[in-house]
Image (cartoon, rainbow, N blue to C red; front, side):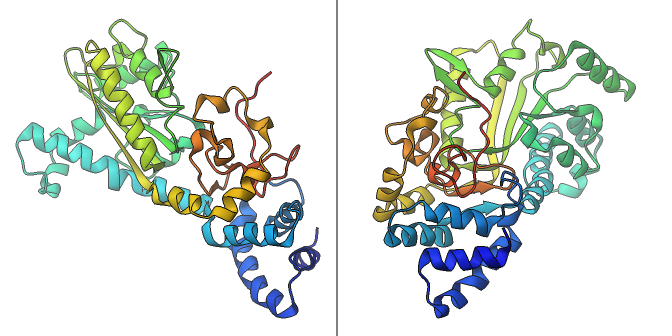
Length: 362
């Protein structure tokens, strides 16, 4: 659809006067060109303005259309690919480097504020080299993280927490070549986004599950990844997300703490952090928009509420997976923690930014 035609249809859909059209058009064009057109799950030939027209047309009354439209202008958060790349690029300097510096300072008895002296030390180089960097999904952009710092070797970076025996042997062999007699003692688990923490660490039917749980289980004595680690040393596990909600960070900390208490045989410490934290005030502001909440209740399609969706809280499923109530769009796909009215796939009520599901019931 040509953009000019789409804009005319939008004005007709919203019943705008010429004055209103001239006021709204520049902002919409700027949003589309600067960010929203890059959304990767739009159908061929569709861009933001076209999708907006189709989305607004579904609402029955002009009042409902205005409520939905104002929500998009006032509350939508869109993380572009450039913004995500920026978060990846600052992760080493802002989150990883301070951890290695603190560990080195503790080892050699220096004040951690003496950064230049610490970074030049042999102990720092060894501490960094004994660190593993593991991507928890393809969204971790672990290759970009490695290239963001010349200090990280390719031989200490993994794209998955499922590590083959041959890869383990290769990594340990490289350590020996560099005259480092010990094995790894620090692990950074990296991923792009979490809103609930559920897919990373949760208890379901009295059993622990999730990506981080699987990694910790794999380093248990005698398990497949235990040989990566130096026997007798405590493993320092640092979990870092590029974007996370404060709720998810709190829940993960609670669950991993409980798991650690239940399994003292796994000798590890842990920390959890994010480069960009989304606070709970965003959800509170959306819930306070009573007219909008009534709108998304009315247009909710329960066919999305499958077995995977029900693994989180779902008394109010129109608020998204685990009722996270996020107005968030990522350029490559929309999280299911976001409001479903934004991401419904094309085969039901159309979402403004249709989502491609990773998990489906048969």
